[in-house]
Amino acid sequence: MRKVFDIVKTPLTLIILLVILVGGFWWGWKQVSAPIPTTPAAPCVTTKLKDNTLHANQVTVRVYNSGSIAGRATKISTELKNKGFKVPTVTNSDDPVEKTTIIGSSADNPEVKLVAGMFKGAQITADGRVDNTVDVVVGDTYGGFNDKGATSIKVSSGVACIPSATPTATASATA
Image (cartoon, rainbow, N blue to C red; front, side, top):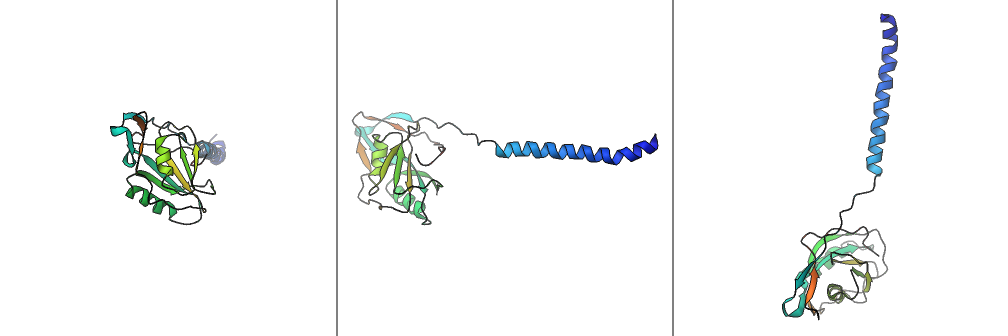
C-alpha cells in the first residue's frame, strides 16, 4: 500500500495544482474581460439664478483632445478656467472628431450655448445627459478660442440645472 501511495502521490499533486491553476486563470480572465461597471451620472441640481443669469463659474466643462496635437486640451482647459468655467477633466479621447464638438444635454441648454460661444466654428451635439456637464472635444480642425466669448447668459426661466459637485464620466466623449 505504501508503494502505491508513493507512486500516485506526485501525479495526484500535479493534477490538483493544475486544477487550481486552471481555475485561477478562468476566474482572472472572467474578471479582466468583464465590462467596466458604470456609475450613473448624478443628476443636476435645479437652482434659481440671481438676475436670471447663468455664469461661467456655474458650468462644468470636460475637455477631450481627439486630435494629433499634444497639449491642445490642456491649453483649452486653461483658457476656459481663465474665463471662470469649472474644468475637472482634461484628457485624450479615442473617438475622432473632425472639428470642435460641444456635447451637452440639449443644444438649447444655456450652459451648452455659453460654452459653444467660446469656440469658433464649433458644432453642437446633444446626448440627453442628466448631469448637465458640457464636453468639449477638439480634433485637428480647431477653429480657435473666442477670447471675446460671453461669460454669462440670460436664462428666461430664471432657473438652471447646475451639475452636482461630483460629475461622472460618460461612456463616450462623442455622440
